[in-house]
Length: 199
Image 1 (cartoon, rainbow, N blue to C red):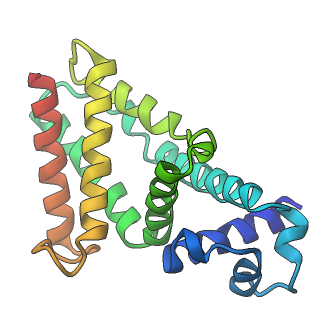
Image 2: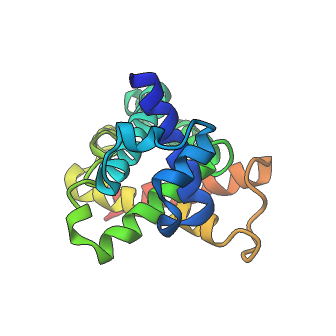
């Protein structure tokens, strides 16, 4: 049952990435997943349940990748460590801009939807692992206020990711997946981390 729910949630992510939240219907997910009509509604009875399943799948996939990256275990004792940390974050962001692009688009679409539908805010209140990792990173880097500094760092990373997604083809940023793009992401994160720590 979990495999089928994951398949449908993955299809829902693709639907939202391609058509926005307005395009998210049980029928559209059935078509995207290549399953018989009515399959999605058998697992997710309401649209709210479908959104919940989609968001939970986003959180699970992001958590798995963040855990694998293990950025919160890197010592940050000097410039070389900051560079290594920035390289790791740049690689993760680059992944979310290329292989994970649909997930990133769906995540922002869901968050924007919640601004118009307050009942969705509790559904979308996920992301504890990224915040915990950001807190560990800034603490290792010598932050005197890891709670404050990690919130600022997460906001910056979210903004950078959104800018690269929304500005694709508009900004002068190099295409995601290129060494130039990863270098810009690395530089931006390094500058943000050092700026946050300087307070």
